[in-house]
Length: 475
Image (cartoon, rainbow, N blue to C red):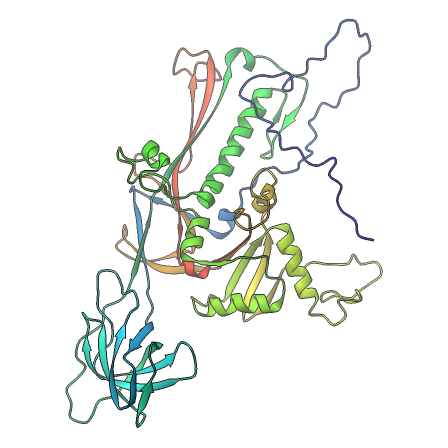
């Protein structure tokens, strides 16, 4: 009989932090007419466990300083030449003809990378026809080149589109060398840091008031002073935002409200940043329409990775449902999986807890699976509805290791993790994680304000190198 999780009691999404002191923040049930002293549990009960969501970038990335408003890097282009939109006039029984390259060429070059003497292969994009030829003449600016076919004759029908790639060259005896040379086709990317701030304030009078509830936070801070709890939770919340902002940040569109508010006076630049999700959505690979839950789906993912960097090891950070789907997919590969007699590689001892999960698998590449709390937390992305256009993300595939890029600041090639954070810093100012106290309470003596204000600030950006090797799984 099918069942379901009942809607009650559910989970509380009401914020636990308020900007003012409310009755829900303090114990007010004090009545002189009640002569009986209740039993009290002094320590808070941590009913939501560890509430922080930051951990992803610490696992897969690194942090390094930057002393500029703009971070630039170059990524390698392809080594070989291939065009996918090549056309020719309709011809019948010819030995030579002219082809036109209609692909979008590298910005700034405006010319095709084909030279006289190179040998090329053509394949009809509609299927059913392929042939090889040698290049006899090239007009780089016009994007056309002449070829002589290796077949006796070739017939090309009307409105046919071909894919063409260079596979070598051939010259006759005593001929001159190759004419022209090719320059490296690097792709340049940039990103800018954003400034994050937070603050906690408490009056000097409230600092001198002690409570009877022992408060605690995820970083181990304990005490009977309520403001200690609020200050520590502000710090934990800021720590989470340092990571989630790097995941979710987007550049502000020109003349948008955010660009006018945060950028320059005309609203044309200077606001926002490229977060991980934005970079992968625009420069990486995206799987949509439900989770891949059979080997055929993952085969499509693997075949796409073959066409990119072919990184050997990858980690898939998943939400709970995606994790279940992968476990069920792997279990289905066991011929006894349906009967439940053998699920995974272990002895089914009667005293052994049945392990219904998998940590990873190998199929072409190594894939490791890791639960991502950020995608499960109901106060963050875990509470988003499903469905097309909902923005719900079910997982992110991240290549392991590092890549070599040309660092504009260092002026040389450098090894960098595929994901890393750059924070603003110089010899006199380090903005990685700044915190300072102002006011006249709590040991501070910077102003006449009868309060303690704890300020937090960071300026940082995330660099997603080789985004073409990432995979985003979303609705």
